[in-house]
Length: 288
Image 1 (cartoon, one colour):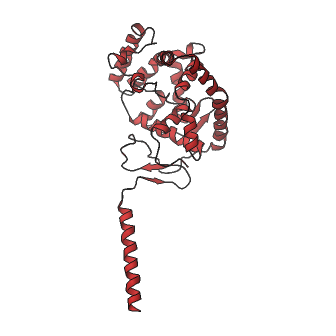
Image 2 (spheres, rainbow, N blue to C red):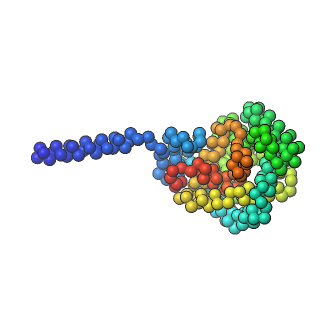
Image 3 (cartoon, helix red, strand yellow):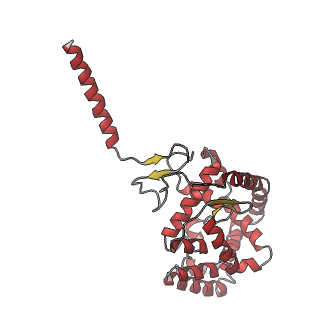
């Protein structure tokens, strides 16, 4: 009987020691059981501020948002993707990059004003210099010699980020038809961006910009849907993380020459931006 007790005690101590070794390993992430939220701990491969959501995201408009998500999903696969593939087949990569440079150039007032509002006066000066160089040497902005020759890379600021810098929270998530994931703060900010963007006053330029940008990122939304267990929740969380990171991160973004393609459009612009964000900073396990 004594031998049996000693054996049981030895087994118990072995199990406890093994459990202690497992718990001593640094945890990489913890999951909310149902919300799809996650938390990274000490993962240097992730950008600062990414994956810091630890609880369920309040989404009181979720039924409506899911309907609009399905609408946008159909629009992407039935309309936007086929048109973008045709555009990619007709227009060579260099030509599409010129178009991307031009539409980015037209949005200079948005970035310049928001850099100034956030106290990023160096960034505002860079945007002003870029506008002058690219308008003249870059032939109305179709080229980007400011970045390619002088290293003046654009900032990526908007009114939604400015409101966040001033401490205004994101508010409830909103998934707009034909625009994609957003939130209350960024929706208000988008109104200011539209007013300042020169492209707003050029007929048809927003459609060309949408098609052209999508042509560089075909496959990323599809990859996102294949890997996300719940695409709506995954897209919502990816968008919120993307915006949180952009508010905390200051500085220039990579140029098209450095990445061999324009960066995915940022902000409330349909589905490609959060999907590309998910692809770049994908967690080790899928969104649930």
